[in-house]
Length: 173
Image 1 (cartoon, one colour):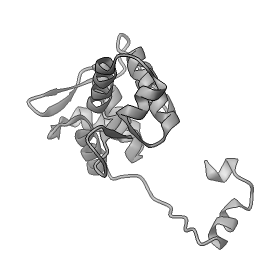
Image 2: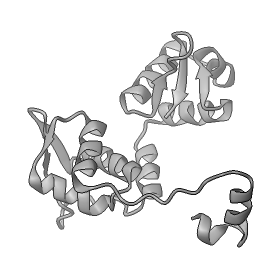
Image 3: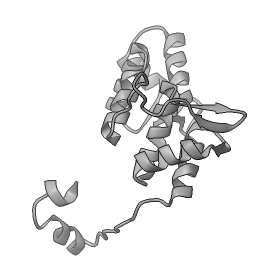
């Protein structure tokens, strides 16, 4: 948090440099639900699932997104005919999701296959945009396996095809 980890005069120096600080409040409940639905490709959400996402996310858009993805990947939420349903609400036998955004992202990365983790690490070394060719230069090996790992990362929403470039270029999400 900038308020607690930056030098005491950081905000005033940023303001003098022409940067503006915007304080944004949390998303409204219906916005939280929409972000979660969009993240996991659903058209609607049951009241129980909406309450769970809305309460646990605190209205932070990125947290809403990551919480929905993690809950879907762990089986706590599932989609039936386009509608998100809660299957486990941290009940005694249910998997408990991390309580922080950092924890959610870390657990999501931990669930990747080793080849996917390595490809993502190497892509991060290259930068926010990279080509398959550049990735192969850092990670020599089977091109077919690499392309498969990149496709799975795209399917999980961790990479996007770079719309500003050629077919074999990606952007880290």
